[in-house]
Image (cartoon, rainbow, N blue to C red; front, side, top):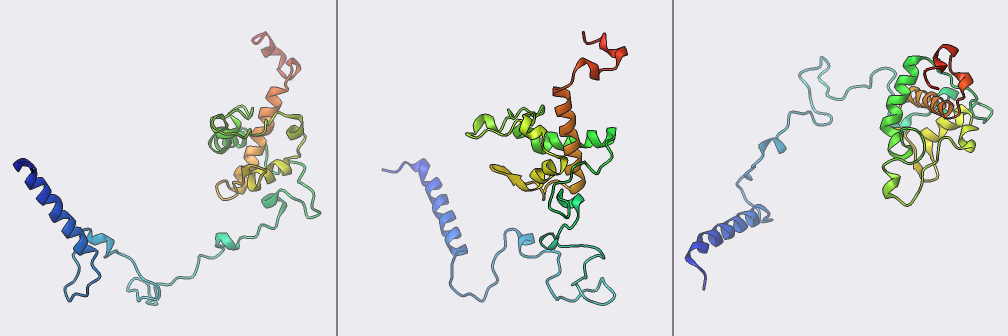
Length: 205
């Protein structure tokens, strides 16, 4: 037997269910629907080919800004964009000037996009592979150290094996900055005392 205290709750649930069902009804009606969230129905926007009182020509459809290229229509055609020379070989040297600012930007983008898998040191022991069955490449392996700069760039843009490409997430200039920073990481792992200025060597011995 239903307790008296539970009857109002049951009645409320039943009323809510009936209301929901009526909202999903396919029966025709002359009455406009009840919109709970009105801004989901009425939005401040122009529909295609609609008239506009804002623009002088009265059209809502606007031509793209001069020089704009749709993402799906972009066709890189230079060694800077692809990392590949016209003869099909990889670009040997990074075209960016290797400055403190370039390395700082490369480090920033490396920490965002590369470090989750490759670790901030480039060891390939990032937080993502700790939970995965595949192991990212160690950027200090001889094989990767021997890549020319254009090949590193090409891998960043297009991926290789289980690594996805980042051409949509990372701009062309930033890809080269990451390449420069990877070279700095590799140099730091292979550095010797002779690479340290004499006046600083006593500090690290």
